[in-house]
Length: 427
Ligand SMILES: *Cc1c(COP(=O)(O)O)cnc(C)c1O
Image (cartoon, rainbow, N blue to C red; front, side):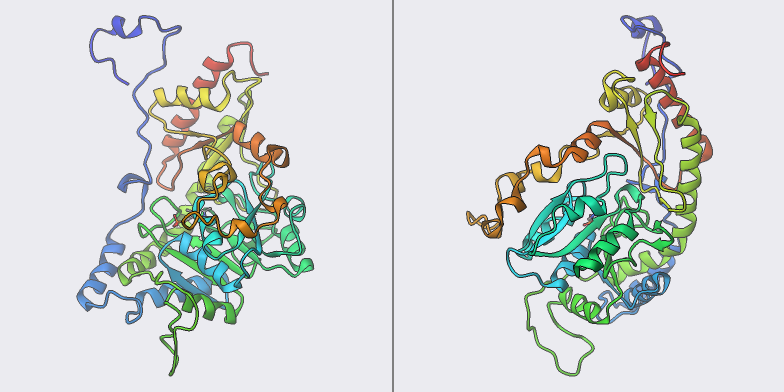
């Protein structure tokens, strides 16, 4: 912030002279500064507009996009849809749980990964997260499996891959399908396995703020031809556009992506690898700068794993940095940096939807079908979740950061930490 008038007036009452306070204008993924959108997208969009074919049921762009996802991930099939939420919904619908069946998921995720479970009449059962990675683990998932578990949804939070070997092995040994939520984790991998290929279905989002975007959009990839067919019909009102004869023979929605979005996505996917590479190298650069700071822990994926840095999140130790993530975020705001303490305000199960079981009218369905243990949200069951949310600070991040942006971000954090922790801290 620039002092608007008399320098002395603006510094009255401040404890110590602030460092240069020009706001750091970081590229933002909410507009063109932090998005990689340009002539390539425009050229493909123009083709679609000039063709006059805007629906994917008749066009070729969305089909080409699906083929590209399937090829890149070595999947048996891929189906585009209108959002990451729709992708999760298609995956759950294809598994076709009975009402009241349970789907194990995570307490720290986007609500779009949870509401589709309830719409399909199933009960989200929350596994605790590891306080460091903020991901579910084989252990935390196993602790909540029951004879009603019909699927596991593992979210790779911030681009940090879950332990796919452990969770995959658990899922196989129990005969429970694994769905991976890769909305934040394009090109991440765990133990050499690309995310989205360890389970039966991998779900992606193309929303404005993800690694690549069409504003809104989604994709499912699957190792099963049968599931691919069910998901394709689910996003097409249960209509099979390829069959000679077809029928609307189950409950399903129109969750199609348009050709306009398909065109943009085809151009975006060409830019994905470079964007992820930049995010990763910039993360390494920032980690080198921050790892010497007292009270700050930087992301540390297991050796060999690829974290694709949708966001860069640090842990803040409030025993060293008074006020913890909240105080650090307030300091960073003075530099024009909008970081997010906690990431989400509260664990998913503390949101009104779960607390009040506000679903369809006054019915509370499908929660009325749940085992009491499945909807027991007592804090004592989620120590990792509460610890993680107390400690986490999520920094804004995208592929358009220059090395100088990263350096200035690191300097802003270092000076904020020095002010909060005081001269005695560290060493
Ligand atoms: C963004 C996101 C979703 C939902 O995707 P939308 O495209 O916004 O519907 C689901 N899960 C996770 C982990 C996400 O980050």
